[in-house]
Structure formats: structure tokens, C-alpha cells
Length: 335
Image (cartoon, rainbow, N blue to C red; front, side, top):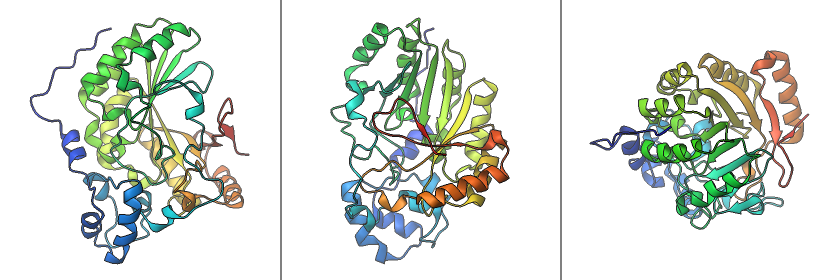
């Protein structure tokens, strides 16, 4: 199917929000009425991995609270500069599984494409914060190599668009890519991993819903939501047309110290997700990427949380607790 997205006369609101995101620590701290004593460390850490926070997400953060769980996910801090044994630049072995620029063939029947090197928000725990996007992104080669690889491997049934964030692509660019994928007969599913609608809900355009809801491939949207306060009214409202269009909505969270490492928060998250029409899918343990060691939750605490969640949640609201091990054929369950 050829998807036609008419060019917009004006810049879409979500792109305006993206352009207006906070990028300077001083302005961000001032907006949130936070102590200027946080500024030197924030500036130093941001030189290694920049600050980027859309204003819509900043509005969800409690002003004046340096321990706000949403703030902790996005504010550069001095702990990022500390060396930590066992933490490195490629914790999940992406580069070893590359079969071409921006093509990761880790798991049987699925191919992951780095669809964009850009994100709407720089999450401090990001496992790809050191990824070489300039050299290793499928979109930089016009998708030609990716499409050829898929054609040559008839066992691939599912394409996973990742990044960066694939929804930083415009609707027209996504439509062009999806049209090429739909022309490959053995493909059945398209999965998109994104955090962009969480931080800029206006990204959930009518055009995007029509694109994902009307094609030959079954569409799955996997959101990255870590805390119940991220389920903003704008996000929940924006997802309803997608749900009605038959697009599967899943969520995967990362277990983060000081953000969601308590049972009350995780129970509220699962309940809120289900009310919004999103199924809790995975609760990932932290990928051990350099600069994120301060987010790691101890093994004993993980076991306690699992026991508490099993006691309080029905099975369909219990996310699967997993870790990704470099070179393993699948996500590893944590039991």
C-alpha cells in the first residue's frame, strides 16, 4: 500500500516543541526553581551527554524538588562522571550484532533498524548514550541496504524501528519507509519503540494513526513509560484513536533507583497503563551503560519488588521482569 501524507503548510506542533526543548542546564534549573548549586555538575555531565527536555515533560516535574522521580531521569549530575566496574559503552552488544549500517539482527525472525539518531528527550540511563549514530544508522543509507537484507532473509517476519526515537521522523518519511517494508511479502509485523509521545503528546497525529492503523503490517507501538505521572492527560487522550484503530499498545519500563523502585509506584503504573489501554509488557533491569550506575537497583531489592507486585497485581498487569544479556538469543527472565 502506498501511503500518501500531504505536506503540512506549517511546522507541526510536535516539531515546534522539539525545537523548543530545554538544552541549557541553567535555563532548565531556573524554570524548575532548583538550587543553582546543581549547575556546575549538570554542565559538566551535559558536555558528555547533552541535556534535552521538552517543556511538556518539564511541566510534569514538581518545581523545587531535586528528588522528583521525573527530574532524576533527565537532569545531568556528577555521578555520571564516576567510573564503575562492569559498566561500558555498549552494554547489550549492539555493535557485535550489526549486519549493516543501523541493522541489528539479534533475535530470530526479527530485525531492528536504527531509524533515527535523534531523541526528543535525553534520558540519563539510556543504553545507547554512546552509540555511534553518525556512522551506524540505517536511515543514512536511504534504507536500501536494510530493504535488501530483509528481502534476502525470508525468516524475518517483524521489523523493529528503534533509535534514537523513530517518531522523530516526520509522518511523510515514516510513510515512505513503511511503504517499502509493506512491499516485502514475508513481513508480518511492524513494531515501533518510542518515548516521544510521552514527552510530547502532540506527536500522536491523526496522520500517524492512519498510517499505522491502515497498512498491511500489524502495527505495535511500544511506549517507554517509567512512572505513573508520565501518563499525562494529553498522552492518554492521544492514544485512544490508536487503540480504536487496532494498533497494539504495549509498555516497557526500566527499573531505576530513585524513580520507580518501590511497589506503590509500579502498581500505580501498571494500573494506569491498563486504564489507558496499554498493556504492561516488560520491566527491564538497567542496562549497565557507562554513566548510569547510580540508577542500578540491588538484586535483593529486585526480588522483594517482584514478590510485592505478584501479591498485589493480577497476572495480566504484572510486567515481565527481564534483563538483556549481550549475545543471548532472547531477553533473560529474572526469577
